[in-house]
Every structure is written in C-alpha cells, then in structure tokens.
Length: 254
Image (cartoon, rainbow, N blue to C red; front, side):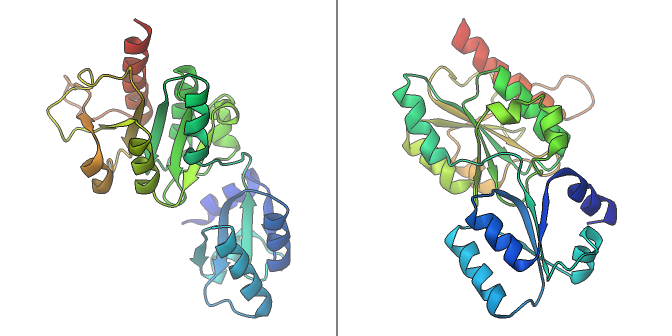
C-alpha cells in the first residue's frame, strides 16, 4: 500500500497508537476499523494486547515498521489502530429481530468490495430499497470511513452493517434461517428475473475484479446474471447491485 493511501486513513478515521492506548480503546468499547501491528513485535504488554485481541475476536495486519512510521511520526510502539465511525453488528442478532417484526428479510452480502465509494453507493441503494442489513468480511473489504459515509449520504448510519471473519459462516446461517442465497454472477445462463425474491432472500455481490468467491457460489441457491447487450462486458458493481435490488423491490411491491 502506498504512502498516500495510508495517510488518507489517518485523515479520515480517528487514530489511536501505542499498545496501552489501543488496549484501553478496545476495553472501552471502541470499534476498530483496522489495526496494524509491527512484524516481530514482542514483550509482556504486547502479550496482553494479543490476549485481548483473541478475547474480542479482533483481526489485525502485520506490517513493516516503515508503514507504521508513514501513519504517524509519534511513538506508536509498533501498534496503530483506527476507530470505526459505526458500530458493527452480527447477522445472527439481526435476523431474529426481523422475523419478530413480521418482516421478510432482504440481506445484502458484499464479497470483496474494496472501493470505498462503491461501498457507499451500494449502501445508499440498499437503504432505499429496504435492505435489512449489509454483511461484509473483516478482511478484503473497503474501509468504512467518512468518504464511504458521504457517498452513502448517511445510509451507513441507518442500515446495520455486519462484519464477519468469513462470509461462509454467516451465509450458511442465513440459509439455516430460511433465506435463499442469490449470487449475482455472470457464471450462469439464468437471468436475475428468474428467482422469486418475495421470500426471505440474501443477495451476494462480488468485486468487479474477482467476482464472488467459489465457496459462496457453491452453496448459493440461485445464480443470477444481468443481461448485457452491448460490447462492454460488465457493469460497475454499485450499478449491478442497484439493478438486482430493484428487481427484488419490483417483485415485492407489485
């Protein structure tokens, strides 16, 4: 990652640096958007931090000290974290509440969406189309920072965002909870108009570069593609999300 991308994070989300400061932030209930730890770091206090990270199930990235020095020139002690502007939730807590309200769940799973503005645009469309929650992975997903929130026009404050270590586990939980998994992918001959979205549904969107991971494709109940009639073979992922979400809206409203 280049210097500018690291510095942009320091200018967006609140930075916390130093082992003890990060420990206190976690124990104080702060949600970490990202955590960077110097490779090879050791010591008693760092051992305490590792125990807390395991207890709270917080992932981190091991990076060279040079990258931490680009983030801050202060004494970071090999640990730099960024506080998330939102509170992440778990999909296991969301689904029962939706059913208790008598609503039909519509969930959006984002697999490997790394562009901040795409994430924000998708969240905006999701909120407008009545999506109950967005599910993202802990790693390999765009940062939820002020740029994402601005692009979402505040939708990221309104719609629950569930962050999970792996998308496979929450996807299987959704199936066990009665939701069908609909993967929006070009790897099928079936168009997006064929599935019945009026029942409990979870729509999976993948990145423009890699698409949806094979493990999610394998367990999906339906594969659905968007018709492409022109010479350009793909759409921006935020546009694709809007198309399939509003097919769900069309079926549910009409």
